[in-house]
Length: 158
Image 1 (tube, rainbow, N blue to C red):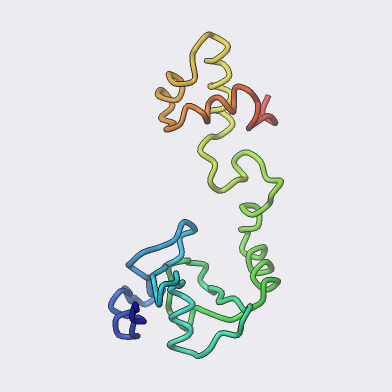
Image 2 (image 1 turned 30 degrees about the horizontal axis):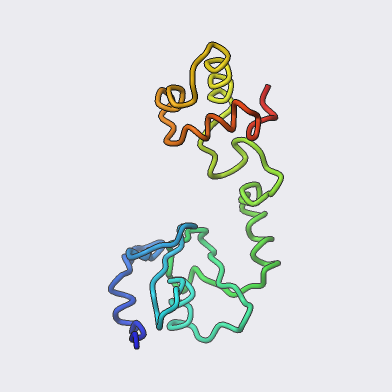
């Protein structure tokens, strides 16, 4: 059976500074520190809170005052509900990134911008294929271009 990470082993993977204490090992796809503990993925900031402050009630979130996903400094962490998390998110101006109706550059992970979309459509109207357009614009996936051309994405841009 896999051993649990000791607090000493945990803190060896943290870069401490005057501000945030940053987790330097693995992270998940949302940018939060993460590691395997007893065959489960464990968020580093939750483990930091657990070993530094105490138990985390079931269903309670460990939130960041500093808004830095890799931060594990106990004084930057606080417990809250899902509602607290969403209120904090809105107050810090991050709610747009979570808006399921957001379009274009209001989507945090957007690869394109409106000028690029107009250029894609202009080139396509002049006979360019999706692969050459993607290559010229430095886009990894020609399917991104195809979605723009066929208005499956960025349909709000004229």
